[in-house]
Amino acid sequence: MTSFFRRLFNRGEADCAETRELASDYLDDDLAPSRRTAVQSHLDKCGPCRAFVEALSTTIGLLGRLPRASVPASFRQTVMNRIKTDDPRKSG
Ligand SMILES: [Zn+2]
Image 1 (cartoon, rainbow, N blue to C red):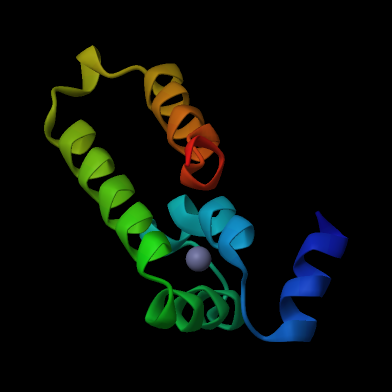
Image 2: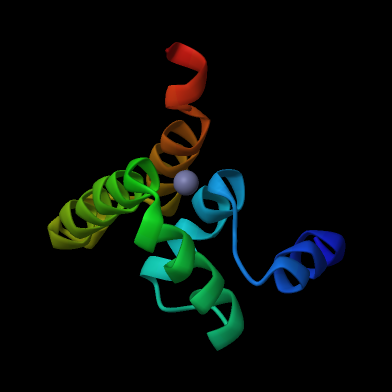
């Protein structure tokens, strides 16, 4: 993970994989400013990633509105994993 962030810092901008990896923390406002900027600058010019973050945001928003008891943390994790592994570049 350390090398992951070192690469991110060195370039000053995240690539698609990194943006998707950081998307949930980005939406939770749980990133250091420099990382947040790296994601933001990628989103500014990458439509697919912007759409990905918006879809993720919607998913989190929907889950957040459901009664807490009906949404175990493991369910949210499952959804997140499914989104992360659903790579549009592979399905064409
Ligand atoms: Zn991208």
